[in-house]
Image (cartoon, rainbow, N blue to C red; front, side, top):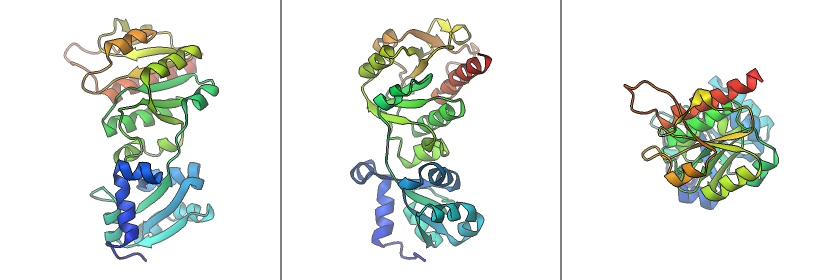
Length: 264
């Protein structure tokens, strides 16, 4: 039982809330039963340690048993230790330290993807995480993020993905121009999702390989990025509503793509 909130181990885990530490150590934190379950189910070889309170040990015994069978080191802690490790106000009793491993753009393109999401300079953790979750839900083959975007391994993004971070490739730190060139070279059409678009979403042909390109929450996509895309697409909404949340717009676009796949 780990009970000392001032121990080196506790401080080491808590320090992973900082991006600089995550990048230096190649580790990040997964907090909560859903994320931990998916990490063990799909990436057990990357899970270094699992910390669990006595209450969570009883409530989530299947998750803990799966971790033990996968060779994960499991440590029982008291509530105070888990709270000291976590950056959430009310941790749910399970916390894992996981090795960072991201895919590359070349790996994604080599798999001949049909549906991709490209996020350019997206800074909000909740939006980024929700897009990853939506991409997973609607069968996307990968999520790509340009440099200047939020760190997908930050605790808030990881929680927002609800485990989807372990289900599909996520590529980070990309140059937007290089990425658009690479997508075009592989026959993947790029649709800029932006409120200034003249093409309405129901009129877009999403039957072939394509990528949805979405921009920053505050200023959207720069004109030069829109100009390089195959088309600029607008989600039709009521005149009473000024705009959609980025994650909501992405979800609608992804659902449209998924619907086209089912019909074909």
